[in-house]
Length: 356
Figure 1 (spheres, rainbow, N blue to C red):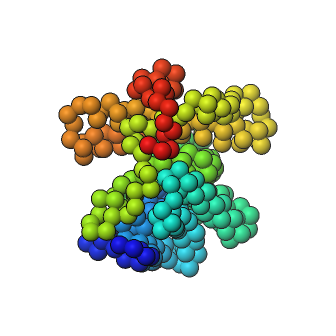
Figure 2: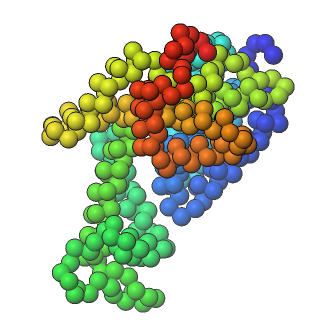
Figure 3: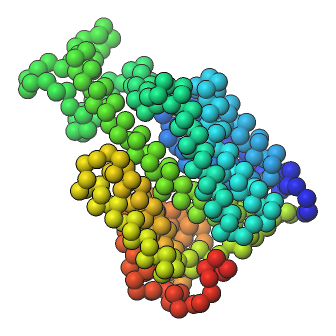
């Protein structure tokens, strides 16, 4: 098919839209729905947008965006539309790359840049909406949602008994009271629980934002964009252009670039040795980039090894996904080891990986 890809591959496009609609409905209906909608949406919504772009084109992307926007409005009213500021940029960048048939490397840089700009735009909008305190505001909103949850006391009890929070009272202090229908924690204990949970949430949100600007952006581009293009190419009758997509199992970091990446590893030392917040932040961002790139190389090594066996393709993909989610430090170690030892024998190949 030539020209603009308005709506293509109807069957697969409508299947993706149906899956996205079901996902949005579930996330917006479950207990602590706002928390799950945001937390899981950070990964799933940009990924869904890129897949719809590669498979279905412009109208598919806008239909998917409308579904996500309806779910966000259901939970957050009109401010929920800010989710589109985060979801749309990488998907639009990938769609433009497909329309212009950009080489894969240029397409990846464009998608990554669009994703980072989307994250920054979302952060600025949240800062403006919260009066300059987006992270504390989000933590307090989560506490308010927890306070109104019917299962609040049971959840807090499990967190307390697991050692994640403490009541902060002297040993032997009564921590429960009757509330007419059962038991609950005393107001003093609840206040202490909420303070600890809010502090942990603020720390978590800060690390998530740093990760979105670095490692998550790299993963979203390298893995999410790659998966979307593969899915788009396999769609019938109008697969998306190849864009020179490389074989992931043969992906590696060229040695000149690999040597320069070790400068980023110094960010880990900056986090340990310097107590200045700005220096620590810079060190954290540097190390996140180093970590993400070598994790990808480790994943490529495992893909190469598993491809030599007799595993079915779907089983191999499930196994790779589980390892990526659970054992990322192991992937980083494998990636560094492969970079040093060239276990796949790829560094001797003079052909540029971009042109593979």
